[in-house]
Image (cartoon, rainbow, N blue to C red; front, side):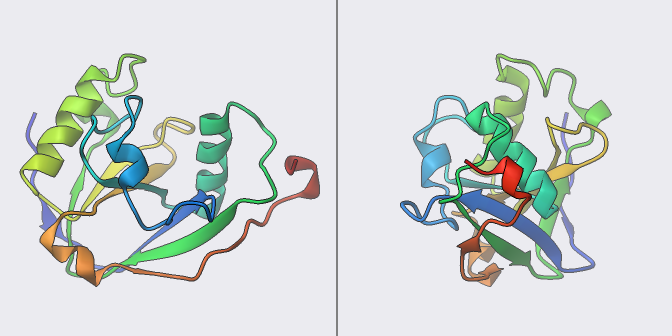
Length: 162
């Protein structure tokens, strides 16, 4: 399946949650991971969610816990209007949500290696068909146009914190 990159008509906003022990606007974690959904080892992909609550749910799923460490921080990421974007919809890629990740990694690796776009919009595994995640190619020529906020302490109901 091939997709076409297009210039975004608007600023895309994304949220990422992580630890201050690692830079949040950095794909180094995905580059050394064998379990990333949309890329295999060696590819610097920044995973973010389109909305803050989506980022919280993605982090909870990653931690395999509904409790979020209060030491985590979040940042808002802006991808400017005009930046190249590609989108994968649920029906575009059978098996994207498979536990073995073969289909999604193959697609994501080709997207990254060919530098088809700065950002890749993908279905969220925590809310398929309702929410999307935004992947950012840190090695893409347009990456310098990405802006981010200063990390802030996460915000959520106190019962969700540990």
